[in-house]
Amino acid sequence: MKLVEIQKVSVQLGGNKVLLDVDLVVNSGEIITIVGPNGSGKSTLLRVIIGAISPTSGTIKKTDDLRIGYVPQRLHIDPTLPMTVNRFLKLPHRISTAEAVWALEQAGVSGLGEKQMSLLSGGQFQRVLLARALMGQPQILILDEATQGLDRPGAASFYQQIEDVRQRMGCAVLMVSHDLHVVMSASDRVICLNRHICCEGAPEYVASAPEYRALFGEGTQGALALYRHHHSHTHDHSAHGDS
Image 1: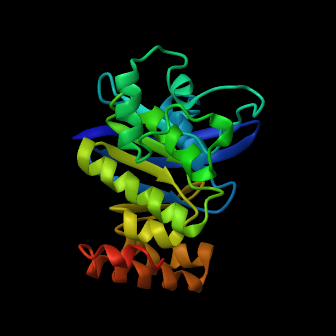
Image 2 (image 1 turned 90 degrees about the vertical axis):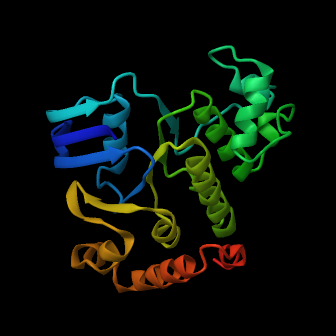
Image 3 (image 1 turned 60 degrees about the vertical axis):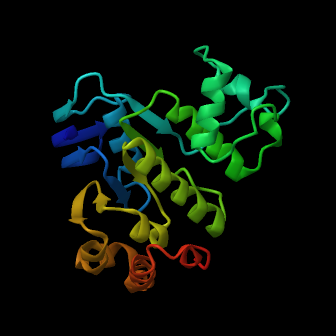
């Protein structure tokens, strides 16, 4: 089922053309990753889908009453503000403690409810943001470089959690990432964006596309080797630990 369909979307911000004639379909249940250099319009594209930015031209169609969960790149909370994880999850809409417990469980951080937000590690903080995004039972989960600042094992573990969420909840996942090695193992489809879509398709196709290599260099073949390695060990969880 098509959840989102974007046709010929362009966005101009302050005289700069940020996106040019972008076409994109997000189907239920698939994991799509958007990669591209800095300033290529990745975050802008996510904001168009969320509805925070209106396209200058083109159309965007969403399924009726589409439920979107959003995990931002970063969120600053005043460290001097006393706030537990549960209290954070209950802002701005009151939810029951049972709902908060469920969401933290889905995000893989059960038992953090009473911990102060200021005492969380980077990985725990991102998972609390993930829990918050999952509370509305989203049909599409949107992540804007949600692993920025995490080390490689932390990022790999976070993406594994996203895969688990997708399998349990059946939601589509649309994410922007710089973690090329993980993208290749975690995505059904990769979109290479540099204001326009340079190439898109299965990870193996995109990794060998000249447009992708032009942006990311030949070194990205290492990402593909990891991708093949991961997929040949899909059921062997020891393969996930040596990224």
